[in-house]
Image (cartoon, rainbow, N blue to C red; front, side, top):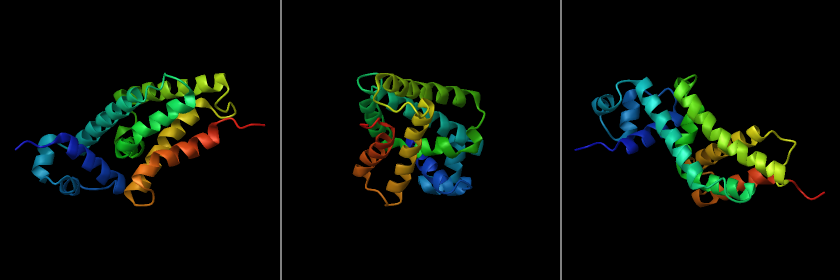
Length: 182
């Protein structure tokens, strides 16, 4: 029987977000596999963390691509991005919280590329006059990802309905970044 690596990574991410100090036994249990199977897939915690980080970045980049953020109004692009990020919030949360991913050149480069794409959209919105210019574009990009992670936790803990999460993030984000009428 083959093991579904995607399932293992998703469950490992969820476990490690909830309990960052989880043992490999606890991670294996959460994924519904034996510790031996987990070790065959990922020989140690660092290997698991790097695999999770790489998969998370692949999924975030795919979400950015699927959102077509380079099309249309910046506000609409951010709405589409949030819609695409919500299903992968646990992977995104792992990226934010895993110390083993700090100062890993491949991880840093991929994250910079992704963040740069979103920052560019925000800057275009600022130039067009639809996004506030008194907040740094890179901060707005980071806030977008952070709010998606927070909404993912709220959904997982039952504080926010899954179907309401994208709207809640977008309303909070854009209500704070869109330029209001003076």
